Amino acid sequence: MKRLIRLRVNGEPVETAVPPNRTLLEMLRDDLGLTGAKEGCGEGDCGACTVLLDGLPVSSCLVLALQAEGREVVTVEGLAREGQLDPLQQAFVEEGGVQCGFCTPGMLLAATSLLAANPDPSEQEIREAIAGNLCRCTGYQKIVESIRRAARRGP
Amino acid sequence: MRLPMFEFAEAESAAEACRMLAGAGPEAALLAGGTDLLVRMKRGLLCPQRVVSIRRLRAGRPAVARDGARLTIDPLATMTEIAADPLLREACANVAAGARAVGSPLIRNLATLGGNLASARPCADTAPPLLTWDASVRLESTGGERSVPLHDFFTGPGASALRLDELLVAVEIELPAGSSGSAFFKLGQRAALEIAIASAAARITLDRPGGIVLEARIALGSVAPVPLRARAAESLLAGREPREELLAAAAAAAAREARPIDDLRASAAYRREMVAVLVRRALAAALASAGGGQ
Image (tube, rainbow over all chains, first blue to last red; front, side, top):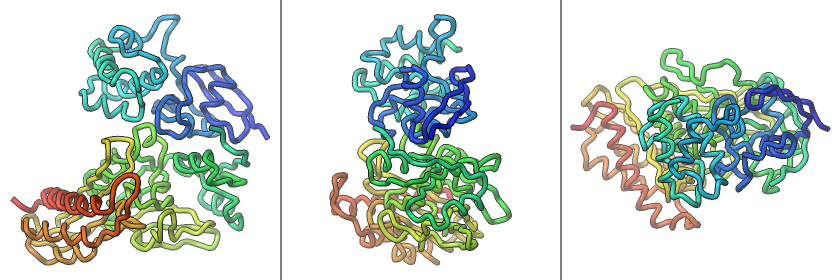
């Protein structure tokens, strides 16, 4: 029943056997131990499970692990380099963009994709980029400011 | 939320996907973006024995190809690709706008145009815009291909002319002669991640910039069992000078043609009033981009 797939996760080649009904989110969390991506709603409404798939943010609860075969996945664990937070993560810390933290991995990845395509986004562009990522703590303002701070500072 | 177990197959060509569907009936389900299918499977609404992924059929092709007046849109293009496509933004701006109104960026990076149409929801955001361009869909099965005008495609909430053994292989638009403009407006409780309370798309084709209306199209979302053409409203505009009073009369006619229901999002009465507002805005914006009005 299980099938062997190969993909890259956070830059590293990964080979793992998955049953067809395993989502990419379940594979990342349960098989690879990468628990940064969270399961919130499980239906693509909350964005807590956001990962980058070939550079684009997607809800990993709505992707089959088998569909990630041969593709490039980045999770929040892939942002820090050698124990150092990346500039976007650092900006979230400095601006208070993190409260309970459940939405944070998804916010970081949605914003990473935005800044890769648009290094100097307007506030409106930032808000649109994180429109699929729900936060129940911050009221979003601090998250938007965190992303602006990272954009001002550059990569 | 767990998915039930199923067998997974990946089609490498449309012909292969059709062979996998042939004779399988509801036991096989097509997987494109997955944003509808997988949710329905998690909720236990669908339990196919076999899931046939068609994502690889997209490989390498542009989202939209133009040959003279004909645009051919790949139904496996994602909403993100449709929203950003330069040909559509130039020629059929309301189709790009409809795609941009779907879900959130996370959903638009997965969801496909074909999925939005094949799901046949009255609220499908790409349906009203495509209806205003008299789009048709090409359906393929092992028995051959057929073309169905989109206005005959939708038959009820979640129901369409697409047979269980058919694959939607192309969405086609024949661009009209003259000077055309289009627009799409969606009303929701919030600006993103929202199912429309009501939506309206319009396309106006003038004989020349500043001229009379050769052809007008108005289509409505979330206010009938299917994405709905407002034909009586359209006919008020054809052959006429597009003055503001006329646009208002057409918007009022469209509101009368809507067949909304009360549900958790809004009442039927509110929806009908909003149709008039949305159609009026859509007509004004379409006219402006067609080079008409003041």
